[in-house]
Length: 117
Image (tube, rainbow, N blue to C red; front, side, top):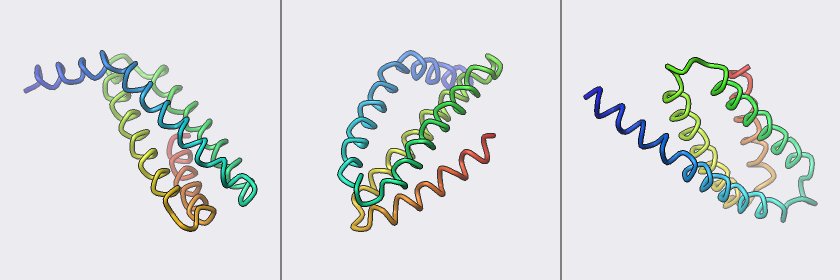
């Protein structure tokens, strides 16, 4: 069981570049979609983007400053958390009240940041 778990984690690490590239490509599409609301709620979009940067910095810092023993765990968590955020942002974009929903997402980001600092 432990060996299988390690093998699965190693495969994920091996595919990290591909997985991360897919996430970054998805974010690029998301950011382009968000641009359509730039006049409707510019302050919220700025806060969203600042928080995105903070989260990226905090997750990277944690990944690189933690011990090698926790590396697999941190990478796995980071990828999962980013995928969850991508799903939530996509739902926000589908909302008929984007500006209201992005405020809710910003609150979610703020909680994540608070818990990571």
